[in-house]
Length: 321
Image 1 (cartoon, rainbow, N blue to C red):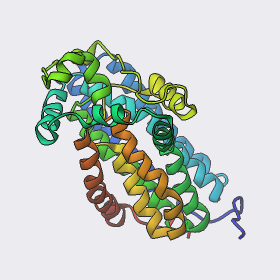
Image 2 (spheres, one colour; image 1 turned 45 degrees about the vertical axis):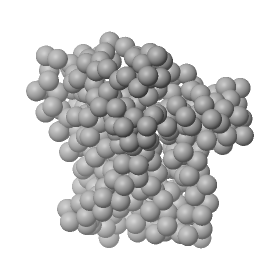
Image 3 (cartoon, rainbow, N blue to C red; image 1 turned 30 degrees about the vertical axis):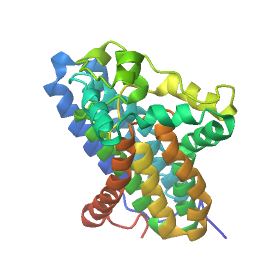
């Protein structure tokens, strides 16, 4: 199959859909920074970062005109998707301003299930044969995104821009929720309140505790495992007390599975084991309450429909003539 990656083509001269939605999110959060300026930790730097991202986006658009082809289009879109690694911890800079809500979600979990499934699951199955596959599934999250997007780029290029837009827009919808619903998850909240409170089902409000503390509970399971240490290392470096409800790991991986199913049943089948392990791992490693994962799964379908509608209604136009 000839990809013609570097063949020069006639292309529209403006922004791609994924760049437009990034600039919209950039603008919305910039406005929010201005409203919360006095309460935020480093608002000036955050605004500067946003100005640089906007400037880079327009610069890439103009550079692209010098050599419009599939490869340079892929680079533009890949850069926007790579910025998700910036936008995710950025949500913490907003929600740390608001009172933490983990006590509400932990109490709801206790009421619904009579305890904490995140504690039961890892305590019941600490063995390597459970821990390693689940950690492997959790670690497969970003490779799953890459696989689905690249598959569309290679095999269904006509849908590549739509797929990248839906992925990035779905992330931004989750990120907006995380900004205004500050839930850190068991791995941050439980160390903050202590094991005794968790055991007794007592979940006190901790207010702005995470504004000054970011202690992370060591992951449960087989701590000598290869995938255990990969997940643990990545969490210690990049995790923040944010983004627990709903679970974007479950939500976004479900969106990816929808797109995989629509694109190729074989691709869907190959990804399915990793998807199932990932969903289980969100509770097993105590990154999420079980209700976070359930709502993450349900919300994925609504978010996929909304993001797809947005693309078709406002942004759909061919990348190449």
